[in-house]
Image (cartoon, rainbow, N blue to C red; front, top):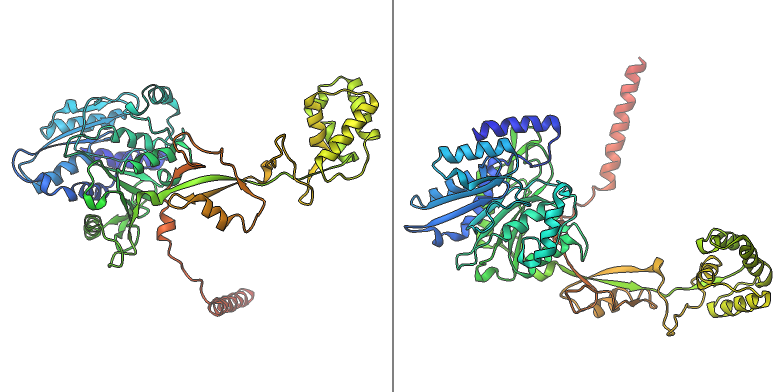
Length: 512
């Protein structure tokens, strides 16, 4: 029933451009996720009287739950498996619940409704959790209860680490699953497939970065596996399997494994495309990926090109704000006076006051170019006093702004304490690896090129005592980029000449 229903869903989603990955997860992807989350639990799953609870917060028709149970039963026929899930789509929920009834499970463990706003399994914790939440779906329609929970419960709730941007709720599902981890000695394992957005979207201090920071600093992420493109029925985008646990093996503590399983050695083209699905993961490819993860392959071995081990802190950066001094020249010129006439503080003056100000700047100020602000301010004060004109601070600021222009040869503008004023237009941000001292980084990467720059040490976040804002991102391309040398010019030139000859011959045939 599930297969038939999901095939219908796939066909209709092709017509209606349904959200990527919202309904149907290919079976080979589910089997890969299941293999990955149980491969390190061999000893824990052996023997009599073993009970395992499996949960999918976006269970659809129950495909992930069914295949997870199948894998556990194959490993240990005596194991007792209890399945739990929640689903928002009414038809999918009905199919899943009926499947639970047919296969001897408690259908009441499958709940209907929105997992993010109405957690039907609020007080439960699970051994295994796996899910394929919808990609790139906004949560604007039901944001109020989520924001309220985050604000009122904080870290005691599900979303205390942060909220992702309103256009994508994938990380909300992941936080929800983490809140369901067991706190006993067995702990929990999570396998979730998402697109690339949760890996790197959002800079330091953003909701996405704070969620990644929370997971990495708590050392929950075991591995992330990059899957091939064109695996899903209604999208060709690349997806990633995240593997998390709160009971890491000793060798994995403080480490994160990245596996690039997108290469041709792991997939095969399908004989007939099914929607956007043009590829499938081979059985031997799935076994290889699982082996690479289980053995924690790294270094100079046969899989060094597709598997790398990192410290969790390797993904952290410190965003520092680099300032450069403001340098301005000043002059009373027709072009600059025209700018003053458009300034809001000037426009708020009555006509007589406007005329007085224009008389001062046009007729009483010298037209020479001032290279220092204090000298120009003295000249402006003298001109105003001589004309008997009094102005407020906003108008004075508008005059200084309108009659000035940036000039690298001008003197540095100083504040009331004698310190250089920063130029907002020259402000820059540098990302310093978390393992490196930011002062050493600035001395090497900034000062040699802009000697007058300095770091704004007041720019920092609330959760870190150091300078700057801490952020985390996981950029697969940075770690698995493969340089492809361009073809030799002689080869390209020869190909172009061949094409030109072919075109000329075709034109001769057309011309008779």
